Length: 429
Ligand code: AMP
Image (cartoon, rainbow, N blue to C red; front, side):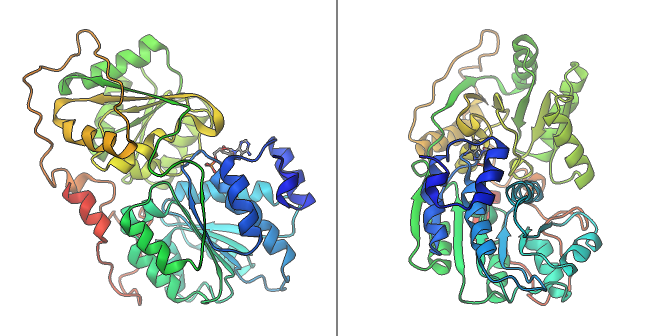
């Protein structure tokens, strides 16, 4: 199948070809036609499948065909969980809309709102936003969502995980009731299905990969290792394997900092990316990682969402996630857009329960391989990390004002936030 047969306009086809895409990915083939027909869509798509173009291309087409109003009210609203993902989506929209007369911008927390407000005042057709900053600006009367025709919830599972359910509900209240809704999620829990049922009308269900399974192009391997030897092992893997670009996941911000310091001491160019880092530091770390001046990027789950790093060869779970769906998200960072990748997990005995949950979710018995000299003590405790331990360190805990995507003024007229069910589950595990 070609992009031509999907019914996209010449202006979009030209932009796609400029971008170097030749064939639409499966999610693009399945999602673009119903979106162009104006239908609601519920899409099950992992990151790396080309899902962003899957919804942005038809939105651009619909908006460019629609009535152009001089004042350019916001006609498409794309909600995403993280700043990085929001920025990435905007970058894609800009590239795809080069030959169209459409304006787009992005708003997220952690940076001064004034440049964002100036952009909004000039009029935008498409707004990409994280929920916190959107509600902030809405509360200040700086944004109107009264003309929104299309709503996208991207990475909806992650938004619920980050406790954005109440925010989403508040935003829905200020949108016109008649609109097209698109919901994208990598995993489908009961909560996501409930959210989808409340928002979507007779949706077309499209799937790029079966629910809750991992991308085939990814080789997955588990190295059982003594907990105290993990740092030594990862340094050995990177240096002896001569790895050039490796994304490493830790469960906590402190863990990310500590591992980064050890790597730097061992001569590996590394940086940490997590919720305690300011936007400037995060952007710099990501840029360094992309241009090859950094070898390792050590990230927590939430900070890593939305990072678009094409052809990432290695992802390492330094610690297994305690939320099994996070495993799917993490390893979705490799093997992107048809490339092969390797996802390695360093697994210590105290993570036995986490591994069991992951294998259950992905429906696979993941291959395990011992590395000589690093094997765990067969008598080591398999007791999981205590419930709630590290709660203060999770990247999803409220952050300091000004560096927080979820930050908003205390006189928020939408009322105080309550933790979502998912958030409870996350921190109680
Ligand atoms: P996404 O899943 O939207 O994050 O996209 C993952 C990567 O695939 C991005 O780097 C896109 O630029 C790229 N991509 C999206 N669609 C295509 C396509 N049809 N052909 C090749 N690459 C694509």
